[in-house]
Image (cartoon, rainbow, N blue to C red; front, side, top):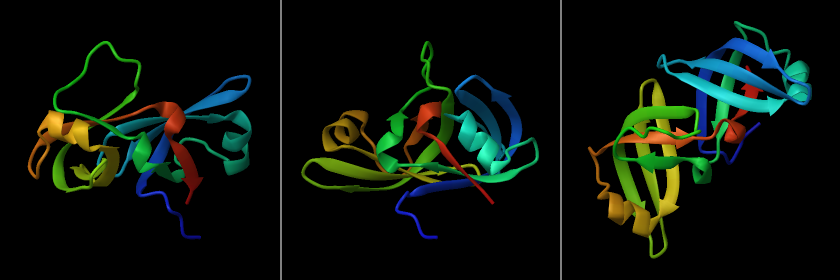
Length: 139
């Protein structure tokens, strides 16, 4: 199956915390970073997610925010440090490729935001992703 989702990061489930309707799934990405996904409990059960399960974390590029410094006091669970690899700008939007340990992410942000952050190849950034915006596919 081919997907239009730009960001597909391989990893392994390290923990599953089931709730009444939702489950919190912790994943160790191939690069060693920890990622948290909040998915429905039914999806976690259907995928048979248990510690050790190989998964692919899927994140739409529109759901990746960027910061140029570590951010404190924020509820966003997933904070992946990286470096801007490249940027393509249009009149309204920018597509920013970010190299992270073990892979690459694409962030679709406004051109104004990219300009305000002074993003260019080589800029260190932190990719911010809400756990509710991470989908999982079992390998």
